[in-house]
Length: 246
Image 1 (tube, rainbow, N blue to C red):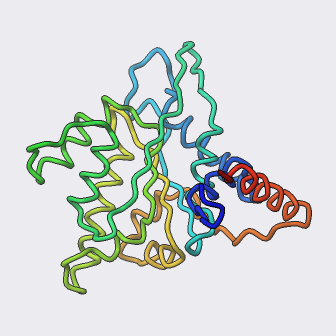
Image 2 (cartoon, rainbow, N blue to C red):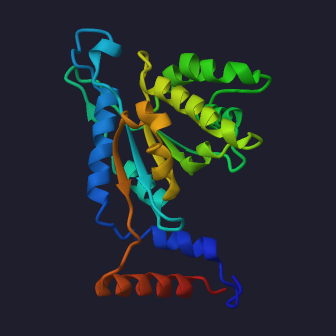
């Protein structure tokens, strides 16, 4: 690397390796663990997994300004989840998938992003078949323990839709997501991540039924480093710079 070149991506990766844990980390880890347990553990191991043999799956949400580390925090908390062992001895590994809502948002675009992360072949699949295929085939086969939807505020500002219809489209998307949480074959725990305006969208009375399915909304404060953490940050940057020379 040229000494005069500042490689921002490489520096970000180096900083991630020395993750500074924010105060919200513990609470977030607890919520994700509760979701995981709800998805993976049956009430009665002698009975088949189904709607009446599990707790009701709920969503969690995290809102914060841009560039405050929301995505990194979610990824770190998910990485720390350990396998769950049911009373019948079955071990379930955490299996999250992370999807960024398309910047030019459409319901079909989001469905395609989800089904691709579920490793399902969508070539030549008609758009109107995507949602059913996700619920009936892709999710039961892949068995994700969490579905993280990043930049979720984009759902409420769909592309190519008149202002009066935006809420209608958003309500339809929320309905599809609620059906994923209620799948009898394999319910999906949702983690919704977005900017501060996501909170006001979710509190719209039109989306009350979806809001009731959210277990908690965490508002992430910008991280303020203590003096010793500033020292750690300087050490990481210095170590990176020392190894980034030709």
